[in-house]
Length: 82
Image 1: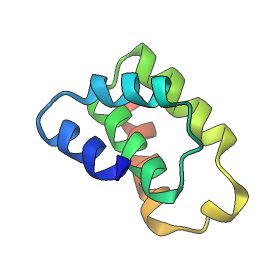
Image 2: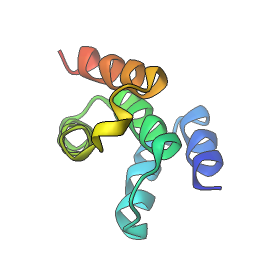
Image 3: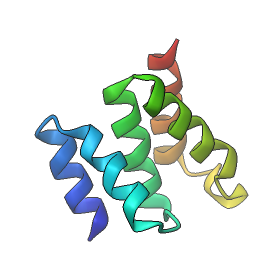
């Protein structure tokens, strides 16, 4: 359910709200939420997004690293950060 809300916010150009909600919820992101959070960070490409995105990447479970969707989202985010 969170993924749908997050994707809707990103689509409507309010990706900052995605990070706000994620901070408030204090949930452990599953593979779908993690990919969506990387997309939100890539869309924002500001200092806060960079900090959160890199933290998420560092804490990402090892078994998610083989997931092509998550890896592609993470690479896209990192490329936008420069």
